[in-house]
Image 1 (cartoon, rainbow, N blue to C red):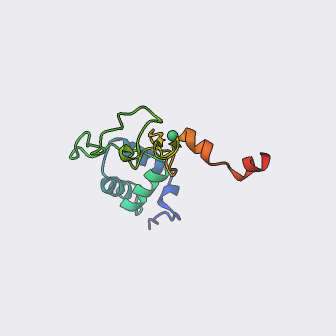
Image 2: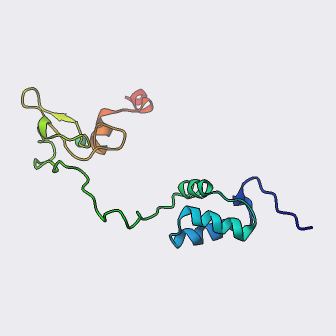
Image 3: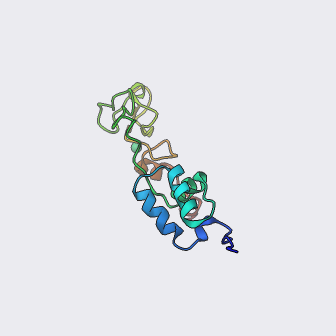
Length: 137
Ligand SMILES: [Zn+2]
């Protein structure tokens, strides 16, 4: 009697990862990759397991061809003012909010924000001091 191999995760099966990467490179859907791996290796590999593995490996896929090649990122045009000269009314949600000057002539940086910060990378470094750096001051 032929016994099916027992693995805690399907990724422990020898050569499965190599085959997963090859199928991923062929741009097959995760559902088809899961079906192919399950059939070839005689174990159950779910579509979600394949999606999770691709995410953990940071494998990036191109968008499906049904979506437009480039969609408009924002309805608002980028600020026409030079960095550091953007008035509040022209400041977008993704623009650096670092202020220059005083009321009523205050202007803002306006460069793209650093993710998770209200400021660009340069102004984030100016505005936020880590506790370790604060201790050294
Ligand atoms: Zn800035």
